[in-house]
Image 1: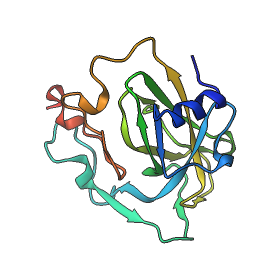
Image 2: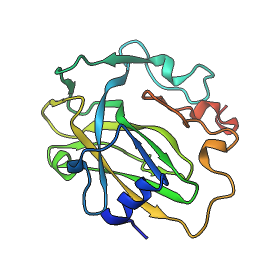
Image 3: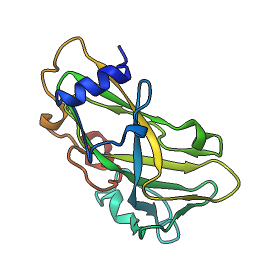
Image 4: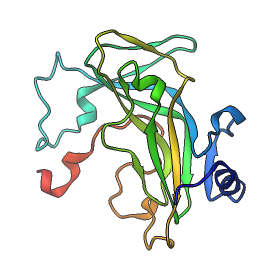
Amino acid sequence: MVLSDVDIQRYISEAKIKITPALPPEQLGSCSVDFRLGNEFSIFEHSRHPYIDLKERAAIQDIMRTITVAPGEPFILQPHEFALAITEETLELDDDVLGRLEGRSSLGRIGIIVHGTAGLFDPGWVGKATLELSNLGRMPVALYPGMRICSFTFEQLSSRVAVPYRKKAGNKYAGQDRPLASKLASETGAR
């Protein structure tokens, strides 16, 4: 069951959903909460690395460059480019609530995709959401830290999970506070 605005507010007041910093009212929709774009981005240095080798033990993060955007300045996402970004807000979910990251229609209409596959946030998640930004359009787009970039919907599970994400052995992204690259190479089957 997807939570309505009434239930989202109740879950926030009961600390079943924690969002910091606190949300201004305009970020709460009928059944979702808008999150804002942070100021840190990671991009692949494709001119220095010819390809990504998932069997290579070197971290994928090592072939990426971090860009921190100054207040009031844009991050320009070029056509057909990909960048990782982070939300301004930190999200913490109770052990019986899951979150789904969704793109915003207004951005999709100009070719900006905010996630390719990583839209599910397991019960027990804690951290900032990494965004998988892509520009499918033909024109560069200026993205500004602090702008509403995505939304989250929330669902109530039938019961609490036995092992919440933050306590799961081998979780790769719990507690992240910056855009982290794929840790796929750390999985035993990838080597």
